[in-house]
Image 1 (cartoon, rainbow, N blue to C red):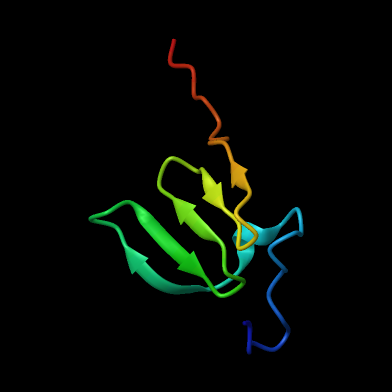
Image 2 (cartoon, rainbow, N blue to C red):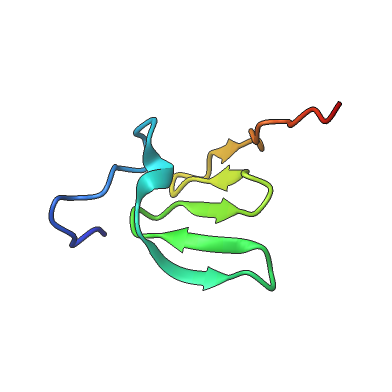
Length: 63
């Protein structure tokens, strides 16, 4: 799907979240990346093959 130069990371790359956003719906909490990944505001992901990646945001501890 990516037409950028250099090409964005593929959906199965560890750095897939670095791909360009092609559609953003912050009111619904998701963005579509040019590699076909749906990225959710809670850091969960839905890959083009249907695989679900659980949210993985870093927890910040406030003392």
